[in-house]
Each structure stands twice: as structure tokens, then as C-alpha cells.
Image (cartoon, rainbow, N blue to C red; front, side, top):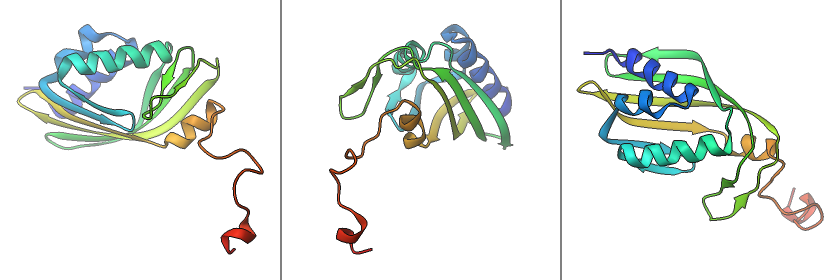
Length: 153
């Protein structure tokens, strides 16, 4: 049976190659992926999520720079690098149209394995870091918010 780090490495190879045929067999049919964008349950939903992500960032690539491996779990710090070339849906239903801007986002993911498959993938990253690089901020425009004096500072 594969070690957790071997499964993670296969998953990442498929992710970086944008190759579902390599990536999906590492994932349990009942596996769950949780990201700031939402949750995908099972291989079909994961395939849909990744296809949309790779359409939005067609050159997206993950580089892991620190890993903690345990028998059935890995925790990895990573950096995603890519170019925003397609629509990026926000959780509230709004869409950020392609900007052509490069992104470089740091994050962490936790993979849990069971019976030779990834059963849980939890992805964490700073959404504001990504949105700022896309030139989109969820804040009021200057002059529309309250100032520090009004806030009591």
C-alpha cells in the first residue's frame, strides 16, 4: 500500500500536469475536498472543481516547499503560481472576469489517507491575497467607508 507522501506526490503530479487521469485514482470515490471556495464530494465533483480551476488559471502550478508526513496524513505548505485567464466565481455568485494578471498565492493543505486513497483534502489560503492580486477588493471604495475617527480610533 502507498504511503501518504506517495499518494500526495501522485496527486500533485496530476494537479500540476492538469491531468485528471493521473490525479483522480489517488482520490477515494467517497473523498471530500474542502477549500475556501467550497466543498467537493467524490471524484466527479473534484473533477468538475479542478476543470473549472484550470480553466480560470490554465498555467496553474503548485510548488510544495515544506512537508510534514505521517503514516496516513500529510501537511504541506505550498505556493500556487498562475495567470488569471478565465472567469473566477466568488462564493456569493459574482464572477471576476479574466484579468490576465499573474498570481502567486501561499497556502497549506492537509491530506488524510485511508485504504490507499486520499479521503480528505483540506486546502487553506489567504483569499484576500488572491483577490488583491486580481485587482478586486471586497471593501468599499475610498471615501465610502467610515474613517478611523468615526470608528473610535
